[in-house]
Amino acid sequence: MTADAVASTRRFTLASLIAVLLSLVVWTGINGRIAENNIRFDKDLLYLYLCGVEQAGQASHDQQDKLVEHLIAASANDHYIYRAKMRAAYCNNYPFTSLSMYYAGKVQQSLGMTDPSRDFPEFLFNALRWGMALSGAALGCLCLLIVFWAGRGPLVLPLFGAIALAALYYMTVPPPSISWSLYQQTPTPPAPLVTLHRTFWLSLYTWINPTGAFSPFSVFPRCLCAMIAFAAFALRWSGRGGAAYWAPIAISFVHQSEAPILLGVMIACDLAARPRELLRPACLVPIVLTVVLTAMRERMLAIMGFSVVAIAIAIAVPIGLAILVFAVPKLRAAAASVWSVVDRFRARWFDRLSLPVADTIVILLGWVAVVVICFFVSRNDQVFRVIYLWSELFPRYIGLFQLPVFAGLIYAAWPWVLSKRPTATREAMVAVSCLMIVLGYMKWKGPWTPTAAIVVQARVFEKVLDQHYSPNEGSFSKTETPWYYLMLRRAYIGGKGLDEYFSKG
Image 1 (spheres, rainbow, N blue to C red):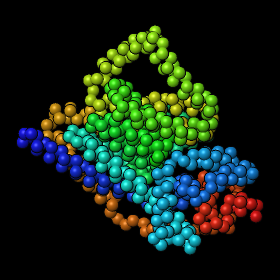
Image 2 (cartoon, rainbow, N blue to C red):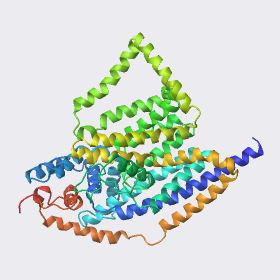
Image 3 (cartoon, rainbow, N blue to C red):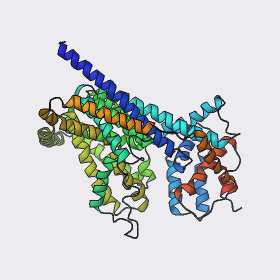
Image 4 (tube, rainbow, N blue to C red):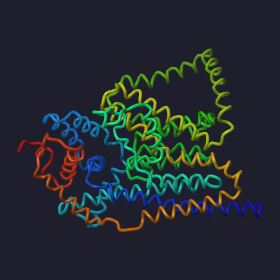
């Protein structure tokens, strides 16, 4: 190895070290602040915890089924009944976060730190906060270590720059309003008119700041999936495509419905850039395992009311056609002829591109397709699917791939920058490092809210023991949070539960 090569290796190794350390500081700072502000007694987080308690066998799933029965008996709003049914049917979707909360509580009990029978709100909040925050931070940090372990040489700056840009935008750009974005609320105005034009520009804005619900810096399970996806693309771009295909399997235990999205996009990227890669056993084995695991665990379409028969037909028809094509020589020859035309077109556009650039183009084309499909399908679909499927699909897609797209765009633009300024890489590393130091300081400085102060607020939830369900419903959070709090309380210390809460006392 020449002296220049040795110096180059050291330089990029030092760059990787600086990038990963500063990325860890900024990512954990933003993640920690989001955890500090958002991990409270709220319906969604208590539901996640309850799922962990059920999966560990401490409570029966019958509680959630009884909740649905109580709501029906109380003539509750159809929307509340739908949400309760949806959650009850999808409790196995988030085992990583759910079980992290449960075992954080067990550790606290075993160490004598908290006692649910003495102070249940304190126990519950500590298990909720530290289980979710610490497990999420550990997974996010592991993903960043993988990113900069895999991404050496010319990949370091794009990967580092992607994190810096996403962090800067998250901290400085106001978040878009994407909740129920495809549901046409009335009157209009003040509700905005849902149009394809507005939906497209809203989704474009979402690339800049996917909001705390979908950002890769956030604490929720879908946000952790974005970090795993970032690590998967860093592995792909560093020549470890087989290892990258294990990422959807990891995601399926964090947020099951994110796994098929990542797998489908990765397969589309390989079909465009290097289709022969899909036939390698190193890629084919994890692909098949992910498909089998998804078929066994994924129930989103059924939960959303799609016919099981229709889903089975939609899956069986392409499989049957594929078998038929391979079995009949004339059909096989016709398919080969069609593929040769497609392959020539593919080669003309993608073979001359680097893999990060090709993947970025495919992801962005997929984003346009997702936005258009979601918009037009939502115009004639039932209201609950519009709210919980189509309105969430495009921001979920964007949050999942924000970091790879930012990295790919930087990678595509950098050769032009270097042609104008040969020293730009070193200067950019210094500039991005300085920016990250500033962002990290902004997030880590100042006081953090003491756990004890939040526990005092959490104890107010004990008043729910003296309350009864009222059909005079307010916000979803105010209405639904007591249900999951009571189910968790009963699972640990018994006492009043849903039966008493829904009684007419």
